[in-house]
Structure formats: structure tokens, C-alpha cells
Length: 389
Ligand SMILES: *[C@@H]1O[C@H](CO)[C@@H](O)[C@H](O)[C@H]1NC(C)=O
Ligand SMILES: *[C@@H]1O[C@H](CO)[C@@H](O)[C@H](O)[C@H]1NC(C)=O
Ligand SMILES: *[C@@H]1O[C@H](CO)[C@@H](O)[C@H](O)[C@H]1NC(C)=O
Ligand SMILES: *[C@@H]1O[C@H](CO)[C@@H](O)[C@H](O)[C@H]1NC(C)=O
Ligand SMILES: *[C@@H]1O[C@H](CO)[C@@H](O)[C@H](O)[C@H]1NC(C)=O
Ligand SMILES: *[C@@H]1O[C@H](CO)[C@@H](O)[C@H](O)[C@H]1NC(C)=O
Image (cartoon, rainbow, N blue to C red; front, side, top):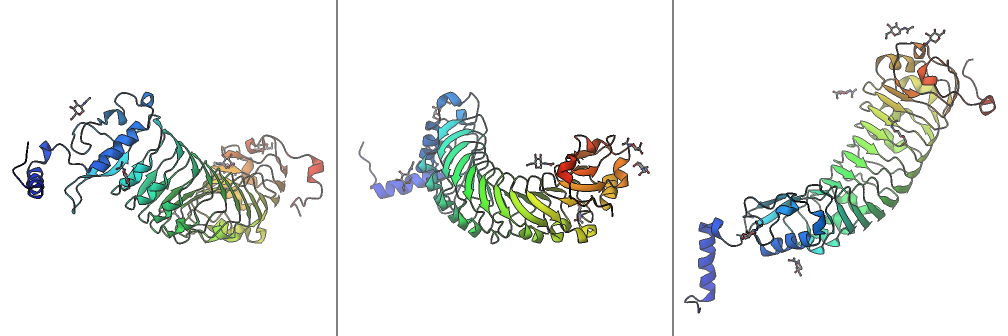
């Protein structure tokens, strides 16, 4: 049917009509946003989309933002400068959706949240995510994503939370991540990342840094002083732990199972907010003994201490006895070369603490639970100062 309006006028009239009656319009979502959702759903094995899961509610012939009872797991907004609605959040449930991520995801340029966690997404993270300039939350943890972390992620300056943990990502951590000034949580644990930890001090609001269970190596860099949780266990990090001493806000420190060496300096053991410290399975040789009184025992909120499987020598400081009675709930000192008698309080039958003193060179009474497992053989303990002088 030939139109009685010139086409330009027709579109003005139609726009006015849509503005007046948005609910009866055929499509009010930007077509390309709708198209991306279709592509996303079509790239997932339909056998892994159970009935009444979020993705099952995505009716590809309906409008994503307008249909009221469908498209669970997405949020839309009305941008000021456009008449079309845009997708601002994709927050999928975790039913084990099995698929790959399409490049077109980068076209959802209004997206602020992308959460695809705990599914079975495979293959690389598309480079096109560098187009999601408004993204604040990116979570793809617990999938089978592989390849490297796209360098373009460093262009997403609004990112506050990045969780790519529990995948099989490899390659190094992009050095320019530090340019993300708003970053608060960075979780990259349980991948196959290698290389050094970049200097993240410019991410001055960083609260949580979890890089454990990767293949990271080299010395510890400086970290932002804002850190409250630092988890670097199960890597092959080496050198001294001096940079940790500046982290005055730290509450949880897990450096276990690395190749860190040297002595644990006084300032590290004075971190006043720490409640959990785990430096087990390293090559530490000592704690600055002369300053021991000011160490660990002065940290009022500390409840869990793990110094196991290092090369610590010397006696257990007497001050630990008071802590064992009053505040510490867990103390692992096993597999070191500690010598001498236990602080008196350790033998109090009413102490029911988690931990172990096994495999040292201590005089450890067998009726003390912490001593279960026995001590090293005399030949392993030869020449160690037993601290009794
Ligand atoms: C995404 O954007 C690219 C480049 O503008 C375009 O070629 C492509 O067709 C878009 N994809 C979709 C699904 O709209
Ligand atoms: C999908 O949406 C179309 C268009 O709104 C509608 O006709 C159809 O009934 C819907 N299908 C389902 C399964 O809800
Ligand atoms: C400390 O680290 C070791 C080795 O990574 C781990 O086995 C242990 O569960 C951790 N936690 C505590 C409380 O010691
Ligand atoms: C110990 O923890 C409490 C409660 O979280 C906190 O208010 C207090 O400041 C902490 N103490 C120190 C010395 O940091
Ligand atoms: C043993 O512990 C109990 C309860 O904490 C305390 O009252 C008692 O004085 C302790 N005894 C010794 C010898 O420390
Ligand atoms: C272990 O035995 C010693 C000496 O007999 C005793 O003083 C101490 O209270 C006992 N400790 C425990 C935990 O039973």
C-alpha cells in the first residue's frame, strides 16, 4: 500500500505514536540489543537450558524489554538521548548453560553488569568486551573459559568488580589493569595464569585481590594500601614479603604454598586488623625473634595463625601461651624446626584449639592434643639450639 506521507514525516508520526503508546509497540528495544540476546541464546546448547531457567524464558520472537513475564535475568533502561530501550544488565542463573560467548556481546554498549557465573561457557572471552565501556561488574567465574584475559578489559574504566576465577584462563595478568582506578574486587583464582603479578597500586580502592591457585612467579610487587583480603596461595612466588608490611587494612592474608623466603618481618606481624594469617608451605626461615613480643601477639583481632611447613627455628614464644588461652582459635606450627618446651598454657587440659605442633624438635607432651603426630627424629634435630638456655 503506497504511503500518503513522505517517508520522513511518516517516521516522525510513528515515533510520536510509539512515545504515546509504548506498550503496544512491536519493538521498543534497540534491534541490535535484541539481536545480541538472540545470538547469545542460540550459541548455547538447548539441551542445557532447563525448563523455567532464566534462558528458557527468553522468547526470541518477543521484545526483551517490553515483555512482562519473560526475559528473566536481564534489566533494561531508557537512555535519555534515545527512544529505544537498552539492555543494562545480564545476570544469568547457574544451570550449567553450555555454550560459547559470541563477539556480538560487545554491542551491548549500555551494559553495566554481566554475570554468567557458574555455568559451562567454553572458549575465549571475546575481545569485543572492550566495547562495554559502562561495565561495572564482570563475573564469569566457574566456567570453562580459556585463552588469555582480553587486554581490552583495561579500557573498561568503570569496572569495580572483576571475577574470572575458576576457569582455565592462561597467559599473564594484563599489566595495565592498574589503570582501573575504581576496581574494588579482582578475583582471578583457580586459573592457569602465569607471569608476574603486576603493580596494582594505582587501583587505590582495591579491597580484595585473589590470585591463588595459578602459576604466577617472581617477587611480590607493591600492593594498594586499601587491600583487606589478599590471597596468593598455590603459586610459585618467591623473594621476601616486605611489601605486605604496608597493608595496614589487611584482614585476611594467605600466602601459603609458594616459595617465599627470608624472615617474616616485624611490621607484617603487627598488621592490626588481621584475623587470618596463613604462610604455611613456604621457605621462611625465621620471625624477627628479637622483636617477638611485638609480633602476632599484639594483633588483637587475630584468631587463626598458620606458620606450618616452613623452616622456622627457635622456641615457641611464651607470649603465644596467653593468646592460646584468650583469643587464638587455630594455630598451625607443624613441620618446622622449633625447639624447647611448650609455653605452660599449652598443657592446660581445658584448651581445645585447632592446630598442630607436630614434626618439630619440641619437647611436646603426648597428652597435649596439639602434639599429636609426633616430633622429628633426633637426627633431624641435631645442632638446633633447643632454646632452653
Ligand atoms: C555488532 O556491531 C558490529 C559493528 O558495528 C556489527 O557489524 C554487527 O552486525 C553487530 N551485531 C549485532 C548482533 O547487532
Ligand atoms: C513469544 O512471543 C510471541 C510474540 O510476543 C508470542 O506470540 C508467543 O506466544 C510467545 N511464545 C511463548 C512460548 O510464550
Ligand atoms: C592454609 O594453607 C594451607 C596450604 O595452602 C591449607 O591447606 C590450609 O587449609 C590453609 N588454611 C588454614 C586455616 O590453615
Ligand atoms: C577488631 O575488629 C573490630 C570489629 O571488626 C574492629 O572494630 C576493630 O577496629 C578491630 N581492632 C583493631 C585493632 O583493628
Ligand atoms: C586452665 O584453663 C582454665 C580455663 O581457661 C583456667 O581457669 C586455668 O587457670 C588454666 N590453668 C593453667 C595452669 O593455666
Ligand atoms: C599432661 O600431663 C601433665 C603431667 O602429667 C599434666 O600436668 C597436664 O595437665 C596434662 N595435660 C593434658 C592436656 O592432659
